[in-house]
Length: 141
Image (cartoon, rainbow, N blue to C red; front, side, top):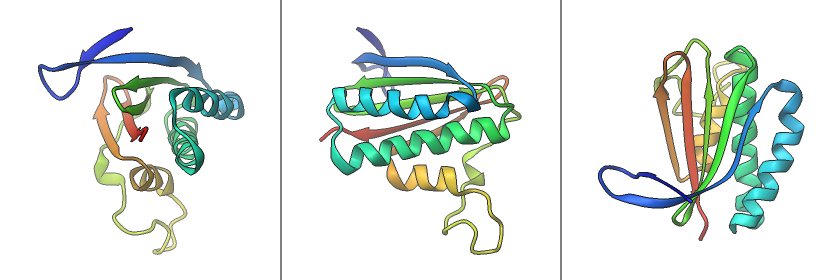
């Protein structure tokens, strides 16, 4: 069991469920792995499907926009299932996520992060050197 700071000086126990590097060819297998681990962690029904969809959206962004190689860590932290996806791409900030449904202006991009923000209970985008780390979570209850 690992621990890491949650919002300051308080530590919460964290259980690593999956840690894997991936490329575009791995996306179908990644969806299956995440679905199985999410089920074992206690995320059920439509929420689990939403979580897997969010994982796929963020991982697909890594493949399409950040050079194709990423790392995913799936962790149970308290009453949440957390996914952290990191890449070595050019980076971006949360400002790129549109407020309204993407594509209404004719642009076919921007739906993955918008959808992830909509589906998850928490979304944090952090600059890395190089790249970006996208962390999102869903409550298990």
